[in-house]
Image 1: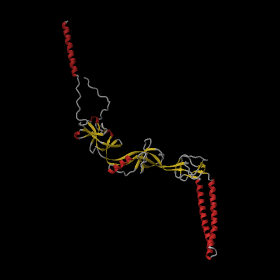
Image 2: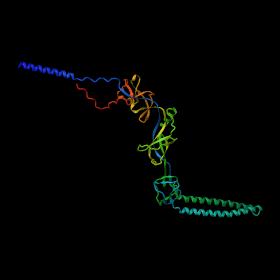
Image 3: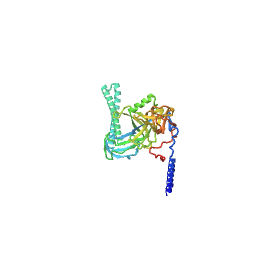
Length: 396
């Protein structure tokens, strides 16, 4: 019995030693350290020619607009147009009752006929007196009176003709016509309404929509900065004065406009000046009063340095900076000055030069002073996004 227990104890001890030996042998080795410096994707700074634009807000204005008002008073007998339709210059829009003006015209013509008849008699008398004065058959006083009567009769005829013309014009004004071609709006009066000459309220408004003005505003500070850049040679004046248009819904207007002029007076309430561009509007997609954004070419920078926005960060002071692969292939932080955005890039005015290598990919591994391997942007291994699952650790 004692011998059997001794053999059992030896078996258990042997088994425990073998188990400990197997456990120690199963411990994995640690992962080998990465070989070589980390790869980062870079771009090389290359100055390029860039047209700089500015986006300004404004509104559309008809190129021609005319308010229709009566030039004589009377009762509107008939409206002769359809509201919202296109009308031609000279087309009759309203008819005012012409009865009293026709009577005045007829009376003026009768007065002219009477004055012309009187002129004939006076002219014959003045002619006879001119012949008689040569032989002293009449006194000089009588001859002078005859010649004066002739001049007065001639003046009466001229006055009568003017009265006839005035009456004819007033009669014509009873037919109110469109001063321009365009689209007419709603009528403010109906048949039977009483209107007066040169009244304050327009009967209707005609607007020419074949081409439209776009009035945009630019601050004087931006205007002065632009002039300074042009004077210093930073920008060159563009030979093109074309303007692009963006509509209220964000869609681009398909046709290009032309910048016409810049206002010479500053608006004291806003501190801005007005720029005017003209756009063709054959399909009348632009309507008066629409809010739009105009993209105006300011000038051309012949040696612009553009850096994608993803490569620009901010330091604790709020200054823009980029990571550059410098001497000895080490990462260097470089503060820069940015002027504005151009598309998805920053326009850099100071801090970079041609040939500098800017890190765009692998910035998480690009610590200042560390050595890196620069490869063209897009070929560096993508860094694992934050929050992605990590591989499981080896079991001990």
